[in-house]
Length: 184
Ligand SMILES: [Zn+2]
Image 1 (cartoon, helix red, strand yellow):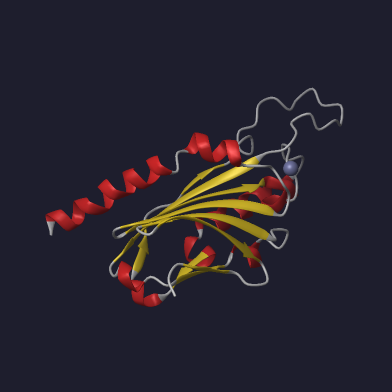
Image 2 (cartoon, protein in one colour):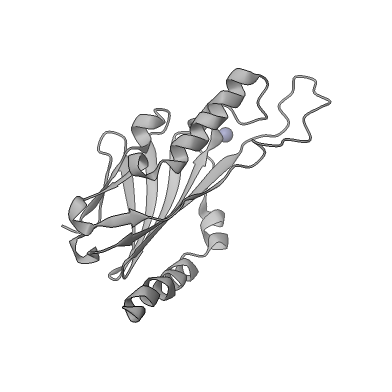
């Protein structure tokens, strides 16, 4: 039991190294409607890192201006942390989530939006969410159904960088067919 407890952590670290954040960010283009997902399957562990534009998640990319906009940000946060809705593994794999981590630049305690002249000088912004799952039966992993398109209708495409024991592949998932296929 001790070995099987340790293995996911060791292999997950290797997986993250292989898709290091610097390299991934360099490849990211900020395009509305398009999100990026780094997805690594290593042993029992599945890790995901989603990068999406604030435009697709909340509809704007600046500090919130009123309660309605603050509520939209809070809703998006809740939805991104709701891993069971966003990522639905085929049941036989027995995947259980660890607590997801969400990074929301500039959305919370915003501090440089006081002297405003109506000009949105902050430009574009991306949100990132990270997820980790432990799967009892990773050999049974077949597919992940993506609920993110329904929750965030502005989102049309997710470019997936998939890293498994078989190597690295790039997959494009469209809202019309919201499924990441991991094995035939
Ligand atoms: Zn933008």
